[in-house]
Image (cartoon, rainbow, N blue to C red; front, side, top):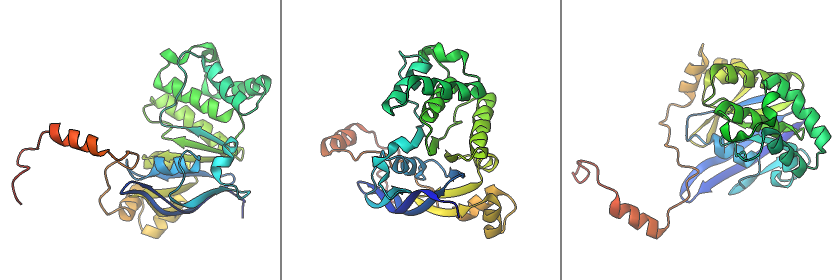
Length: 273
């Protein structure tokens, strides 16, 4: 069996009274492209933040292959968040170089690695441009280059093609496929089943903070007795999906009172059922 690079052991994450993730057990192995699939509010982003060390689990652990907690070795991870977080007054290359220097990568090594991937993304000429005027697709590509510059062991992508045009989304998917072919490990969060099936060799279905299924697309179809991945997803997630609230901070007493005072009631809200 391939070595496990990243492991989740009994991880639960709470935000006040909201249980965003519940008793998650998961192993990420070298060379896999793992699709985290679920609806908005399922817990995908929260799980990615646990895997990247941004969040700490309320209980349980997230550990790397050497047994260290993940927040102690973030240099082994490359992360492309849903919000790219680029510095708009810097050029694309300056954003990437700043990130590389934080990881102790020389400018020469960073440039050579950036140029290699930039050619695949059609980004070479844009490296010297300020990111302020970049389209969503250009920002996403820059964030991907930034995440790859320090040669991470695991790449974490949160909805990497959301809002991209067809051509840009296809380029990103092709690059992820290339990384997989070269033995890279990618965790690919998406709510698009068709995209996960095209890109990933393993799919983890998250629903209401729980892992409902984990396996190859073929294995999920066989386990559910269905012919299409969409049908399998419906079978595995029959209960109503919760609204997206797991990342919300609980309101203070003052904020709750203020909201209650000025939020109008819905029509018929006082009627008894």
